[in-house]
Amino acid sequence: MTANLLDFDLEGLAAFCAELGEKRFRATQLFRWIHQKGARDFGQMTDLAKPLRQKLEGNARVEGLPLISQHESADGTIKWLFDVGDGNAVESVFIPEADRGTLCISSQAGCAVGCRFCSTGHQGFSRNLTSGEITGQLWFAEHFLRQHLKTGGDRVISNVVMMGMGEPLQNYAALVPALKTMLDDHGYGLSRRRVTVSTSGVVPMIDRLSEDCPVALAVSLHAPNDALRDKLVPLNRKYPIAELLDACNRYLVHAPRDFITFEYCMLDGVNDLPEHARELAHLLQTHRGQGVSCKLNLIPFNPFPASGLVRSPQQRVQAFAKILSDAGIVTTVRKTRGDDIDAACGQLAGDVQDRTRVDRRIAQQRTVMLKPVPADTTKEA
Ligand code: SAH
Ligand code: SF4
Image (cartoon, rainbow, N blue to C red; front, side, top):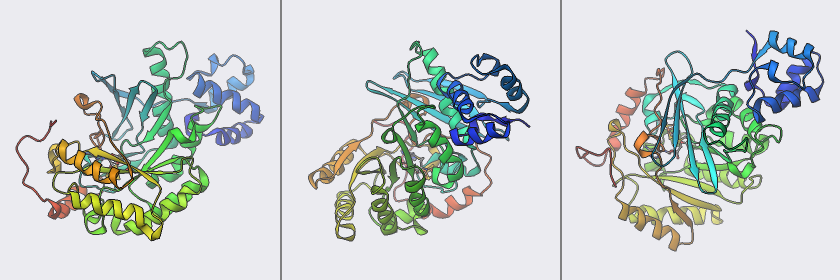
């Protein structure tokens, strides 16, 4: 099998070229063809010497993910479903805004963390994506969008968020080369501040990321205390809140931004009451006496039938946000985009051949259900 060049960051590609007896600057040229121009045919790469092109034909390929479907929302959001083999599919979402274009990327087929409120979590885990499958989502989307939006070759995607399917820090070895390709000036040239890894809190890997590739960090908190977080984010039993916040403070020393973004999914009656808001403000401001420099992003829960959970009413979200803001924590409420095509956070379901018996684990966790579920909870204001 030939090597898929999408698997390599520039260092990796240089090593691959060295094996073919080629100098480093050839790797740089090749990397630019692939990522800056979206080329896949070596024959197209006219400034590479013919013998090199022939060597590449025999040893390498540039192979994106097979596209299964594309849906475009009324608000311009586009969702793609990609085939990753063995009955698994993953999703990527492009979210256009006036001043930026954000791509939301998947890191795994499914997810083993099994959060109560997440439809990916409910599907269980099949496998890690390779670096090429992670990078391939950006490679495809960027070059597709340049044509689709007729930008005349100008870049479209300015921000990447690792907030699609999967827990990126449980696929660390594949994640890092993909991040490096995103940041590389010969690749996508994205700013570290505009590439965000979102994690449910894999503490040791937060430390490693700070050394290997410090990008912006978002941490999915969802609860102000361990008793509640244990139920919503099962990983909390392994890495409880105090350890997670310590890791956040260590990360801030290296981070490209001087704050961590905490994500908090608003679940009706579960974690959205004024006392939760006060407890959260206290936690974030007094942890180990110094608090954590942060912003808080409240995410309206995007319901899916199997969750048994309900989105918090808007008034409750506003009241929650006000308590946090009044306490001095910068708090925003995430706009829901791509609702009409099920592209909103936590709705990315793809198709996963579960290997973890997640249905059984989640059935065991159902003790957390706090409210009976009204018949129609799938679309709410
Ligand atoms: N595994 C990583 C990244 C993917 S999830 C993480 O958990 O951070 C990206 C974000 O979507 C997380 O903050 C997650 O908590 C949130 N999310 C998951 N399910 C959701 C849902 N049904 N509604 C709203 N947000 C959800
Ligand atoms: Fe996995 Fe993140 Fe979903 Fe939790 S919220 S199950 S960590 S993808």
